[in-house]
Amino acid sequence: MIISDLKKLEYALSEIPGEEVYNLEQVHGMLTAILTGPSVVMPSDWVPYVFSSEGKMPNLEHEKTENLISLLMKLNNHIASQLDSRDFVPLIGCEEEGGKPYPDPHPWCLSFLEGMSLWGEEWVEGEDDDSVLIDLLTPIVYFADIKDKRELRTKKSKKDIEKIELDLIEDIPRCVWNIREYWRKRVCGEDPEMDNEEYEVLEFSKEDFFANGLCLCGSGKQFDRCCWKNSHN
Image (tube, rainbow, N blue to C red):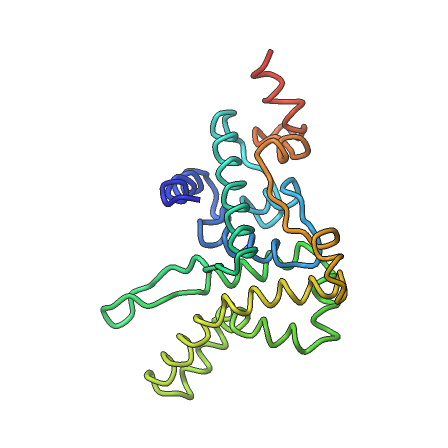
């Protein structure tokens, strides 16, 4: 996915009304969790949560719908490709602190945890019976919880805090890839022949969403029976 596509997606998301609509960092965090989890989550199941915590679709024009879904699928496939090549980098923004930019992983990490919730009990079962998964989630949980950060900042010097937090940020790519491997082994066992068959990071196109997802015009109908059908009559 090229930089211009990321900017287009960022702009498209900013144009959607509503306080709960994810920004680019948040979508990236949620998609990363979806692509590293225990099973495949179809676009028709996760796309609505980009727009609201209740999974409600916004009322968008047909052309904007196609453009937005196409960009979201490109981002999904870009992250999947990075995970396959072990070249993953989280999309983390910055905030001003002391007159200089400082990484702010909170939006990305919080959205990762929200993405985990799309599996319901599957993630929880992994956390409950295996300390490995808990350890791998440590930097993500730390930055998602602002309260924990504030408590740490009352106990450590600013220099120590910066060192700890920068180390945790640098560890996020390793943790993400190993979370993916954790679930791969849980699903496939140690049999390498099962690797591609039983645990596969799928790439999607906008057509995959439109075949199953609700139309973004708000009608409550599937897209292929609503705006897509009307646009092709």
